Each structure stands twice: as structure tokens, then as C-alpha cells.
Image 1 (tube, helix red, strand yellow):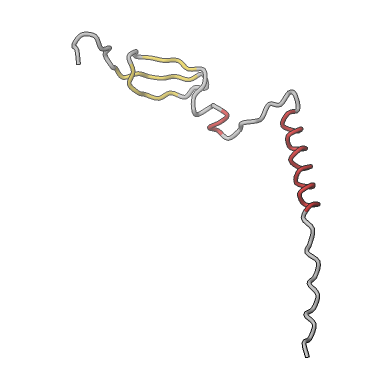
Image 2 (image 1 turned 60 degrees about the horizontal axis):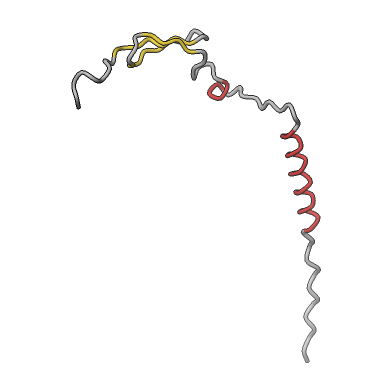
Length: 87
């Protein structure tokens, strides 16, 4: 490695808008975030699907129609005739 061209890594205190703070290492001593893993909906399990155009509902309707059509296509096999007795 060449000397004098790499930044110094220091202990960094990261603060989120939700109030969560943690310490890591970075090239600056402090960072302020808008969102972190403690408040992001994906990580908290409170994620909602925002569907303003109804695409998700249309997809679900198409899937239900396809499942109904497939169930209608599957016909039970007719019973096999009894084997005739050979004398």
C-alpha cells in the first residue's frame, strides 16, 4: 500500500432519526441517517404493499381464475369395467 493516500479510519457514532445510535468505524466521526434497520419497515415486519393502481389485486384475480380453470380441467377417471370371467 502506498503511504499518505488512504483516509484515516476512526470510531464513528451513527445516529438515526428514530433515535437509534450505534458505533462503527468510518472515515468521519459522526453520521446522521434518516432510516436504519431498527425503523425500516422491511426489517421490522411492518412492510405494506402500496398498490395505487390495483395491480396486485388484478394479479390475485387472474391467479384465482387460473386455479379454478385448472381444477375444472382435471376430470376424474371413469371406473374401469370389471374383467370378464374367462371359462
